[in-house]
Image (spheres, rainbow, N blue to C red):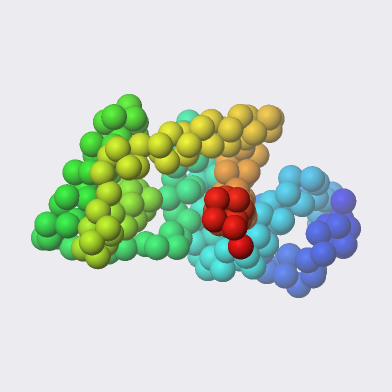
Length: 216
């Protein structure tokens, strides 16, 4: 398709598409002459991902470019490609952990490590504070402890098992896609667009269960 067709199919203006091309968020089309290029379904798919990241995720252009560089890095195996792309996404509760930990933070870190050991999860232990999700988990557990709502590994284990099942289902869905690049794009899109779906399903399920148990 030509650039005008890409704009019509995506609903994105020509000016915005040209900006994305200049910024390296969209790969160049295949030149068919000195002034025209041709685009295909991969450009349409990438354009939709870029719009989701910028409009829904409110992710800065520079960060989008960095995420997509990891998505397109075929020198990496799929696990490293996915990990690099997802770690680059802004975390909604990104904390800054102090160099000198207080007691609640140290206890939360030990709790997280104990939980991962019981689950048999090696990756979180290996990555540790390099992972925004790991840092956010430790910070959240520490905050709960400070406020008088401490959790144990026994408390967290059932939730973690449910998340493990969800992760298996996520990867099963991702593996239907034919290329590692498309799989990485799907993982990024799911992180931006689908995680709010899961959060709100949980809250709606709580409301339903509360009504069943306690009435209105």
